[in-house]
Length: 235
Image 1: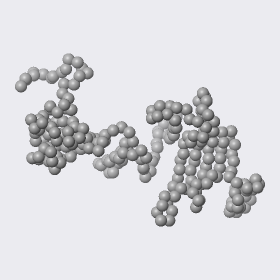
Image 2: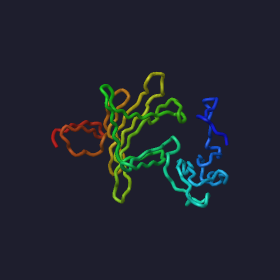
Image 3: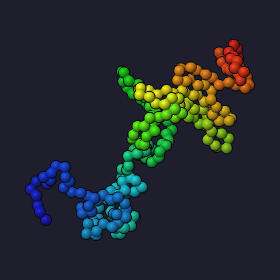
Image 4: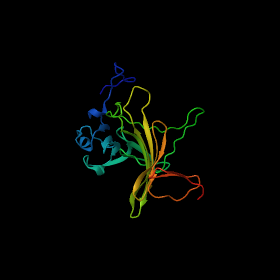
């Protein structure tokens, strides 16, 4: 075995000296699956072997401390690294523990968006494109640009709609910095979501017409199906 009096360095700074994915490093390896780890040559196997192994899209670190290289019971998990790069959600379970999951619709119990700045405020931006992932393609009239929906629970434990805000494009996209949209506000009732108010692209507000008179509200406004407008004077 050669002995070097100093550090070993490749003459090409962009090349690796040791590649643990080539299964020739005794005591350390990087494997795409447990089956790849199990098929490692016995000439490289050793007690205390540290194997970083991909399990269910996650790289986990295992130490070999048994008598059967191919048995899961011979491996002790010592840590994990979330794998992949899309839809990864990291959740804090305690001061010392974290967990993650993979989903295209991550769920949170609450979200706090904070920014400490003298000139900028926190922002939540919803973006729509007709293109494939990572590409921009113009949206068209009728496309829902963004929607924020609300839900409750009905009798029987069913998920129930409770209102939403919807922004819909009303004209084909042009070359300007913006697209024309209308905003619709829906409220929830026993039938589901019902439209209550619309603010169109010309900044005109319209309220939905009602077939029966609502409960009087001081300062309230409603319109009936005969196109009559009523103002609330008293409750």
